[in-house]
Image (cartoon, rainbow, N blue to C red; front, side, top):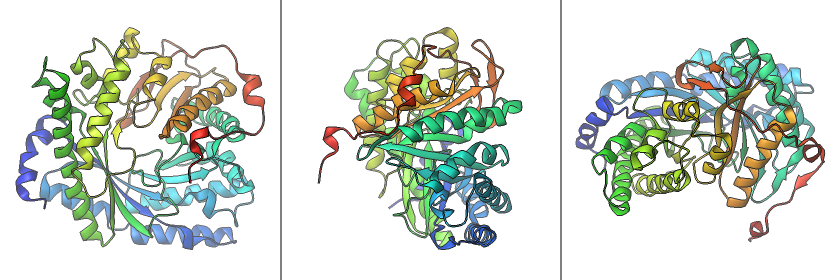
Length: 454
């Protein structure tokens, strides 16, 4: 049982070490909103979201006030719109109207973001899926709170290279559509392999078709807490180091379990999972990079970085899984560049490169995240980077993702400003040798041999 003593025990973590509940995410199924009439579809979507989520923000604020636990974001995830809009949407422009409906509903209930403007195309694209993907640039440029994700690969199905090629083009077009804001639209678009159905974190959140009609998922963060704990065991052996990370992750996850249970009870919606992810912010002392440097690296990117990150990620999961009835999502460590001051500093001094980040994604929770690259980068190069990351996920049976931001009008040496939790990012160099002929091939990269399990 979780008791008030456990909450009191966490006050130092909250007050001094940047512990927070990063998000309460209400998942809403839109399967019963489908209609062949576009106007009716939009009406159904708006009404269902605004009815079910009307108390979400208020509930989060009450829990925050009563328990003294910061809850940074209140968010919504919905069933992938590529599935919901197929009967009514006959053009990319039709899908854009759905994005604007989602945005309007999100503003009405007061949430920070709404995720699920998504398509699941790991094996092939339907015409509807392709229309949604082609609508993404206009949809993200014309909305404030809508987030989009495309799942283009999985260990079971392989990698849909037609979708990878198209996504590279759409990333570039989204950058162009939002070039006046440092191409910020791309910060709301993520390309996945093995996307989880229960991810509460944006921009990749959507409600999987196997989920219930409405669910509560909570995402907890705490890089500052882990770093502070490791400062107390500086110079100790790996056994002590690992035990410290596990115990700290356990305590942090208990906070998420408490908040999830309270939100579930007060809203009358089932609690589904706690996602314990060390998700950094631009704030000083809230950095995954600083944890890795506390472990013993001069700078992130130095030899030993991938090993240190693998250990951190594993111990976080081991501690978290013992603390909650249901741990899911992307639990582990995020390594976004723009949202982590330590990562930004490492890029600026030259210790961290795109290639080293790719190696780190083999063992982190997600992948290449919030990385600003030159605006002149070709769409085929972006597709090549996506394909590399999808291959890592497919072969290693893990979730990987790409959130690249080709900042139009900027080059290496410049900085892109995104604001808020998205932070800022130095423009990182990209290998300029081409992969056009590879990306131009049609079809699907087959699933790996170890996928054949029944």
